[in-house]
Image 1 (cartoon, protein in one colour):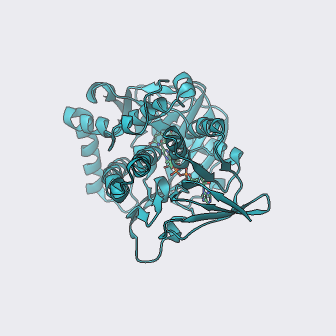
Image 2 (cartoon, protein in one colour):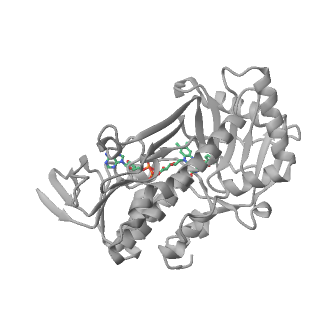
Amino acid sequence: MAELRTQVGIVGAGPAGLLLAHLLHLNGIDSVIVENRSREYVIDRVRAGVLEQGTVDLLHAMGVGAELQRRGLRHEGVYISFNGRRHRIDMTELSGGKAITVYGQNEVVRDLIDARIGTGRPLYFNAQGVEVAALESSQPVVRFSHDGCAHQVHCDFVAGCDGFHGVCRPSIPDGVLSIYERTYPFGWLGILAEAAPSSDELVYTYHDRGFALFSMRSTSVTRLYLQVPPDEPIENWSDERIWDELLRRMTTSDGWKPNVGPILQKSVTPMRSFVAAPMRNGRLFLAGDAAHIVPPTGAKGLNLAAADVVVLARAVKAFYETGSTNWLESYSSICLRRVWKAQRFSWWMTTLLHRLPDENEFDHQRQLADLDYLTTSRAAMTSLAEQYVGLPWEVPLESVVLSRGA
Ligand code: FAD
Ligand code: PHB
């Protein structure tokens, strides 16, 4: 058995775990990251694409923003489309100069893995049988095997950054967590297509046949989503059927439509809202999807993961600098305030833009009125803009990282 010792044991090398590890490193705090998948799998997984202004600022301040600066696509507006017309919301003008940046989650993860490896601190991929124990003691442990050898990491704290299906949340004893959950009667079929984006900005479409979303990954790759029934088998969707449905829902009366090209990847994702509270048990702190899930319509999941770990890094830093546990005690309540606002925004965007199987004509007309109001009232557009580009951080960035530039 290999016995290791660190300050913070981090389970999961997704955005939450990798960002936390690097923030701790910048503050001279040691960590061990344990990930059960391979490096290639983690980097290739196609997921989020939209970074809030604060997440972009964070990556730059951490000194991991060079590729983001080079290849990220800054968007100052977003389109909402319904009744065959696209309506632009000028987010930058309405939010006092902020914007979102389209940069794939897999690129963020790749940049952070490179940064981690550059620090020389440990990151185990392909870890097997990962478990966490002694969470309510002052020395919790993370156990796993790697290359056939059993490892035990003795930590001051464990960060559960292992996503919705991880082991950390289920390790918390029954009765500690309150679970708040809603599932939706639809999912998203997402594709990546080798086609130049036909719009410089995202288009969220409400259509009688269901929701559709136009996004992108680069100047040559388009990312598109369709509302489908929740457990829809992907085999039901030939490439031809996908394009046919996308074009029917998205083509506007002025002739705008996505460019068609070879489909590089396709998959179906279920939609869920989920919160586990508190985000802590003893010396285990949950962050990111391990603690909460939002439906992707608000583009908030990765950004919330980043917001959690900024607070967690601040709390751990305060502990090592002064011995104070005040920040650690407040971690969950500080994070949950933001989490619930993101939950509300994501739920609102989802119910605004999707067709619900059990809706009646009243619901349909109300949705159209909501869309009409949103796209004609400056107050409503301002509200969307400030939430979409991201509400202000809970703690000043300078308290966890000195600005390092791009
Ligand atoms: P994860 O990315 O899930 O990372 C957890 C890591 O832990 C993984 O690497 C996993 O392999 C590892 N792990 C799991 N179990 C174990 C174990 N037992 N031991 C060790 N390691 C383990 N968010 C946005 O902000 N903007 C968007 O535009 C957006 N679009 C999305 C579109 C889709 C289709 C989907 C599915 C999600 C989208 N999201 C978006 C959400 C975003 O992808 C997630 O919120 C984000 O990945 C959360 O990061 P995380 O690090 O908390 O969890
Ligand atoms: C994406 O580009 O993958 C994306 C964009 C906006 C969303 C969700 C996903 O709301």
